[in-house]
Amino acid sequence: MSRTASQRHYLTCGQMAAANSITEKALRFYQKKGLLEPEFVDEETGFRYYSILQSTTLDLITQLRTIGLSLDEIKEIEEAGSIGRLHEALLQQQQRLAEQRQALDLSERLVNDLLSDCDAYFDTPLYDQIIVERRGPRYRLEFPLPPLEEMAWHQEELSGSDLWEWVVRHVKQTIIERGWPLSLFHDVGYIAPRSALDEEDLWARCAFVEVDESYGDCFDEAVPFPEGLHLVMYVNHGFGTAGETLDQDRFQRLRDYAAAKNLELSADPYCESLCRFGRLFNQTSETISAYCLPVRKKVPLE
Image 1 (cartoon, rainbow, N blue to C red):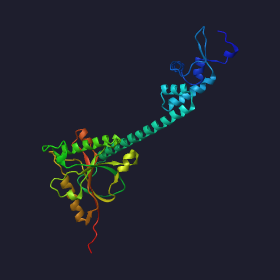
Image 2: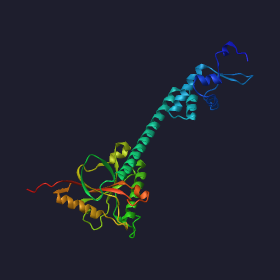
Image 3: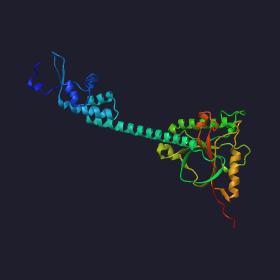
Image 4: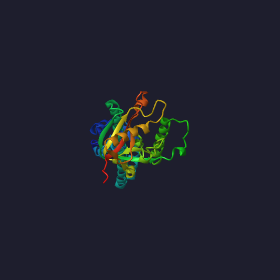
C-alpha cells in the first residue's frame, strides 16, 4: 500500500503497541470495547493505523485501570467527555479504596491475632499457677447477657461447655447484627462481677472481645480493661472432663492468693481466651485461657 504524506505519521498496530508497552491484543480489545478507535483504517486492506497522539488516551486507560476502574466505567467517562465526570469517578474510587484499605487492615489485624493464638500454644505458659502481671491499656467491646433461663437456647441438660459455646454464638450474631467487622469475632472472653463470685453457680453476665481504633466506629463503644496489677492463672482446658465449669474454683484460688498477699480486688475479674486451636485439632489442650484478677494493695483501716 502506498501511504499519502498525511498517512506517513500513522503507526501500525504493532508500532503503537510497542510504543506504549502493551500488546496488539490489548489494542484490539480496547477497540472492541469502544475505548480507542484507530485514527485511520485502510479500506483496501483493513489495516488499522494510530496516531502517536492517541497514546495520551492509552495512558489514561492504563492509569484508570491501575486504580481499579472497570473498562465499562472508563468508557462511561470517555463518552461523557467531561473532566467533571472523571473527577466524580475518581472521588468514588478514592472512597472505595479507603474502604478496601480498612478491610485489608482488619484482615491483617486478624492474621496477627491468630498468629498470637499460635504463639500462645507454642510458648506454653506455666499452667495452673498464679502469676503476678502488670497490664497496660487495652479496650474491649462488652456484650451483656440476659439471665441464663431467659436464653432461647437454654436447656437444663446442656453442659457448661455447651452453654459457653452458645454464648460465643450470641456474640457473633450480635456483631453481625450491628454491622461491625466480623474480624472482631475472635477470642471471646467474659467478665465475672465481684458480686457474683460467691454464687453457687457462677454464670457469665457479660461477654467481651478485645478492640482497638483500627476497627472503626465500633471503637466508640469500647470500654477500657482494668490496668495495673493483676493476678493471672493460665489454664489449658476450659472445662472438666464432663463439660462442667471450673471457673468458681479458679477465681477462688486467685482470691485466696490475693488475701494471703494483702491484696484486694480493684475491678471485676475476667477470663480471656488465648487459643482455641486445640479443639480444632482434637488436642487434649482444647483451649488456653487466662483468669485475671485485677488487684491493689489493701489500704489499712484507720
